[in-house]
Length: 252
Image 1 (cartoon, rainbow, N blue to C red):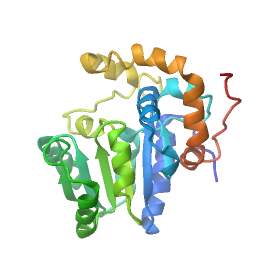
Image 2 (spheres, rainbow, N blue to C red):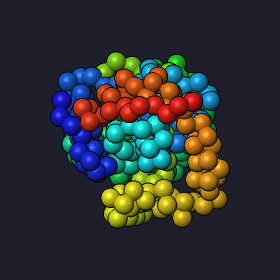
Image 3 (cartoon, one colour):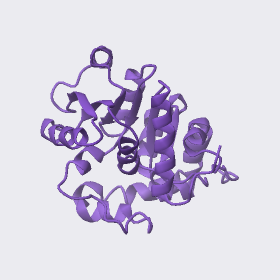
Image 4 (cartoon, rainbow, N blue to C red):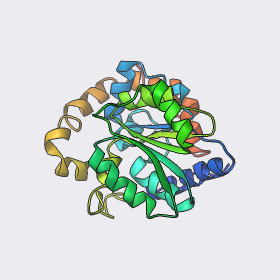
């Protein structure tokens, strides 16, 4: 297996190709991402991240805290790359609002003959996992994008997963993709300043994440390291390829 390139966009392209090849072969899997905030939320909620086939890190702070060389990836980079590498996918969208989902569906269906076969918003009558599994089978969905916020979306993905289907969390990507312009400017990725762009655009919702929760993540570094690179180690390596190296863990 070749090493993942150093830049986030390149790493996402590599990862997208891996998932595209899996879909072509009739396999899918489950995927989620963690940053310092969602890692804390998931760890406290007891999300079994070892059950995910792939685990990506979407946060420079978390990468540094747990001392891994796994390159950063994210839904906002990977999903568009996956759509551009495939054609005729049957896609389901779960989360956000009905209006946002309509906009996202229209944009997706304009790319490579993809078809959005099922939408369920995250507020009005979200189905129980058993019901949604049945609906996904009937719709013959191949890719299911779930944006319900951590840790709810993580449990939901694991509950609806089925063989041959790619089910992945997306955080706030549905709302970001529905916007009239690119959420992140081109300069943000190479400079690793996506967090600053998000904070500037959504200060009321995110200020605690990048202040209070960042301090808590530093304080709980040892536990986060064990959770992410210990429990989630195999899933992390599956998403990162040969470039992943777990360094010596910090002392408790």
